[in-house]
Image 1: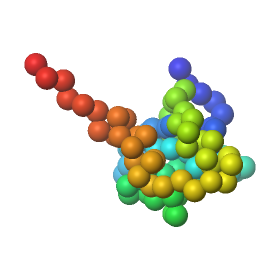
Image 2 (image 1 turned 135 degrees about the vertical axis):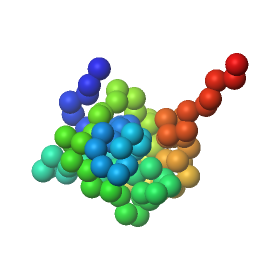
Image 3 (image 1 turned 30 degrees about the horizontal axis):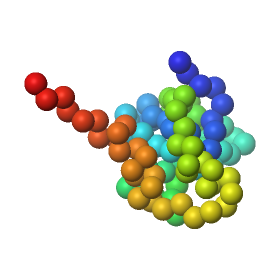
Length: 96
């Protein structure tokens, strides 16, 4: 299922560029068809990466607690973002 509208706190996957297949959290939505994304590791909250929506696959999931903090103007830490995306960027290997 492809989500059309980006939402703050939404999770997305990069489909183009050096960071292909990396998962991000949307921090800001710009009016020109781009969003500011962070992952808490390489792209910190202090310097979000600007990505074109054409180069992102928006997922239906959303980091609710972080999104609420963004909306309220409360401080969000890079470690929170990193933890929220850990299951996406570092999937657990299945034990046989």
